[in-house]
Image 1: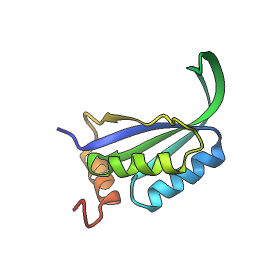
Image 2: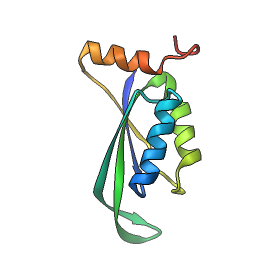
Image 3: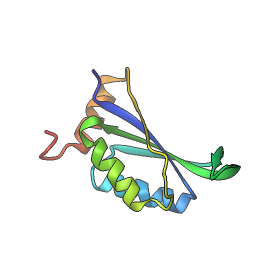
Image 4: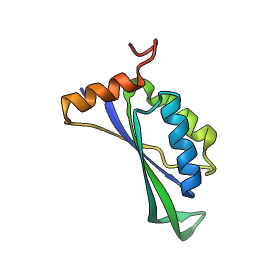
Length: 110
């Protein structure tokens, strides 16, 4: 089974998204984070339908780093209940997947 993941996280604005992305990559919890500004989210919150313009983070990581990544996102995020959704990478360029694993490897994951 694949150990590589794509994790989706929405944030309130590009400033928060940039801080999250910088932290996750610098702490080697993510190999890469794409920051996609200007998405519109429609959702139910506290019994009401809500529409917000948010920024989407597309985070590449591994199973081995996921728990710490999720913990760190929750620690730094401004939302009470941030979206943190992971999907396994079924297929991908072997060269890219090797780079992904090498980029977040530390003593515990080697």
